[in-house]
Each structure stands twice: as C-alpha cells, then as structure tokens.
Length: 363
Image (tube, rainbow, N blue to C red; front, side, top):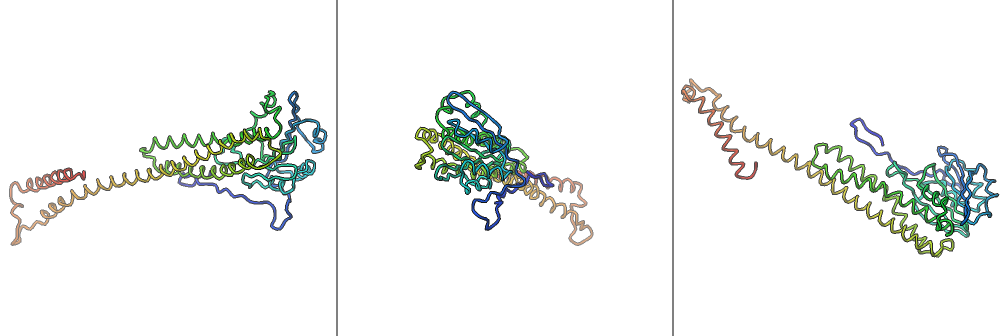
C-alpha cells in the first residue's frame, strides 16, 4: 500500500493480465517471467502407509504412479513452463486446463473433462489482507494434482492429519482430500474477515475522537478490502454448488455431504462480508454526519459571537464620531457619566442578547 505526501494511503490497483498473446493457439502455456520456479512434492498414502518425496525431475513420477491407491502431487511455483508441460503430458491433463492453471486471473470454477476434473479456487494469504492466490486442482482417479503460485499455504494441518493416519483422509479417496483442501482454502478467509470486523468495532467505539480524517480513510480502506474479498469469495459458491449438484463420477456421494458443509462456510463468509460492507457504509455516513454537526456547532458559536458584536460595534462607532462643535452635538461627550453609560449599554446589550438566544434555544 503506497502512501502519498499527506500521509494518506493510496490503493495499489490490482490488474489481471493474460500472458498469452492475442491469436495464440488455445492451450498455450506461457509462464510469467517473474513467477517462482516450479517445485514438486509428492505425498502417497494408503490406510496403513505413507510416503513423501520431493521430485526434482518429472520422470521420477513414473516410479510413483500406479503404486499407491492415493497420490497427492503438489506443484509450487508456475515459472517453469517446460516442467508444467511435461507434467500435463505425463498425467494426461487437458491443455486448456493447464493454460488456465498458469494464467492466474481465473475466477473459481469447475471444468469437467473425460477422465479428470479441473477446479479453481482462490486462497487468502495470511497477513496480506485482501490479496488472494489462485489454487488449481486436477482430480483424477486416485490422483490429486494441485498448483500453487508460491510457497506457503494453509494446508499444513491437512498434511499433519494424513501423517497422523486420520481415518477419513486415509480411507476416503482423493476426492475427500480435494474437499479437505477446498475447505481449508475457504476457511482461510475467516481470520481476515474477523480482523476487519474487529477494526470496524474499534472504529465504531472511536467515532467521537478528533482524528476523523484518518478514521475516514481507514473506513475507505476497509471497504476496498471487503470489495476485493467479496469478488474472490462469491464465485466459490457456484463452484462448490456444481461439485455438489452435478453428476460428477469422480466425486462420491459421501464427499458431497462434506462439500455441503463447505458450501455453508462460503455462505457464512458472504453474509459476514455483506454485513461488514453495510456497516462500513453506515459508519462512513455517520462519520460525515458527525463532522457536519461539529461544523454546524462551530459555525453557530461564531455566528452568535458575530451577532453579539454587531450592536457593540454600532455603539462604539456612534460615540466615536465626536460631533462636539457641530449643531448636532452629543451631550454625552461632556457628561461625567457618559463613558460609563456607553459601557453599560454594551454590557446590557450582550447579556440581553445571550438571554434572548438562550430563551429561544439557540444557545
């Protein structure tokens, strides 16, 4: 987040750019030169055993495939196009799906192919607010392939459960593993959304403080984050609903029951985000009302002071004309108590006007 010369944070515009040239053949895989190099890690397991291995060459996968009932191939980094193409050829992944996995501007969706499913989700990175990362899933019979943009994810608890031999993950198939990873991706939004809710509560408690400008810009920043989160979360609803409702042989009936719970989490997130968006709008309007009321109070005090000094200026100006030798002389100029008469008139005028303003409820 950039900061301008006045200390106000400016939004960094988030633009999604396709890397393929216009007119290129469908299924063309072109990596971002700034993307991280591709690394592969395999986790193979059965109800009674587990094997983990870091893969340095795609050919090493040939010795792993078809030897374990469940295989999770985790690809991290999308910078090595040659490796990704070799993986696609070895595993029989559709070129259009590979192209979408590398072009990380996709919204959450499900694409069904002959022998595998392609699923796109967006994962919320801890500590980066509304910044999300595209995660791609290729679900085949007995094999789950995941693509991540960079190291660091929310899947360590899933890995620990597999290592610990939890019954559901070890015996329910890779479709259940795909559900567990998707559920973790969805749940990764809750800490960020909860943090925004706590900030809104803090703003609500501090509305009467003097630092209104900083608070107003803070509310604007939260609104910007909520809009970004809603754009990322909302497509998950349709994606998970397709996995539940559509006739997909790779998704078992037992796993669909768990996906309904994941769907409920998405709906809960959307409700929270929409509620916080409305609360942000209400707080911004209330902040503007407080500022307007405060300005009106200031203007009222200044108006009262100006109104009080108007007759005083008239009296001072009247007796400052010094018509002493003219036919229309002012006898008070030579009267012993003339000065005290003028001061008394001024004081009486001030108190009289204050009493009148108070009686009218203006002061």
